Length: 237
Length: 207
Image (cartoon, rainbow over all chains, first blue to last red; front, side, top):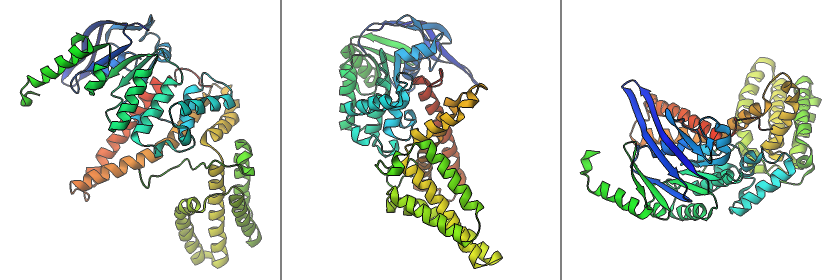
């Protein structure tokens, strides 16, 4: 497993109303295979996830994945850390399914013929072989997410960060994507509102108001999050 | 996603036209288009239309797809022909109509028989000399395919925001759907940029 390390990592942005902190100084060492990140909307979960592959750069402090300084070597970090977005429509960039996978493989396979063969194998492995030459646009939301994941996994990153990958999906595709995520050999950082998925992880972080407020066993973390919501008057938020 | 616009109209097949290299087809398209426009008179235009029809038949362009794709061209061509009829007379009008339809059919036949990626590779190959001047040709190719990919998504966004405005009874206020539409298109572009970065595209040359 890769080792993800945050040292006093802080993210803040300047707004007209003054400095806004998206993540207070956070120090974490994450060697576990499956790590869930849960918490309310706008709490800073996505910011934490995006730090791991330099989509967000820490204002101060540092992030290391397997010894790679993520802010200093973003290209290297992104090869090690795959990222799956909530909305697959934004992630899929090529017109047809097989072409999108080929785009991922471009750097790894120079020969066009074997690149296509590998891309078709990837589609086959994810049950999308029949859609190879169809427009990405004709897929259902769930199929799009599977395709997006297939594209990310095709280049075999050491870590997969998934930012609410099942939020837009129906029940069947949520299960399917969940099963896929938990069958991976990769280290998984899963930002999610699906608490049953979060419970299946080895460790969970609860984020609230730009801080990690609970860190530990996934079951205990989910319980902590649920009780924090239950104990709150609904009009407070 | 019913009634969505699809730009990648590639239909897998085994016709002669499917098997020709994409670069050759692109050059062929250019040559045929120039010839169609440059050669005036009734015989060349009938020849052009016949060639276009033959190529489309050889490539087995599905009739429904052809009808759908040519509909808009037909409207434009009819308007142009009507104006020509008024200014120059019937012969010229028919020539213009057939010319435009032949051009559209040539282009459609190319896209039906050629995957976008093969076209991109051909364009990349043609742009190769520019690399010596420091032009990053892979980026040009990626930009082109992004533009092709973005069209149907943008049409969907437009439809969604218009429906949302309609649901609130605001269809008569252009601002009620144009503003969110523009904001969402820009938002989508940002997300796409993030996704490209996350996939490591643009970190170095893809070739």
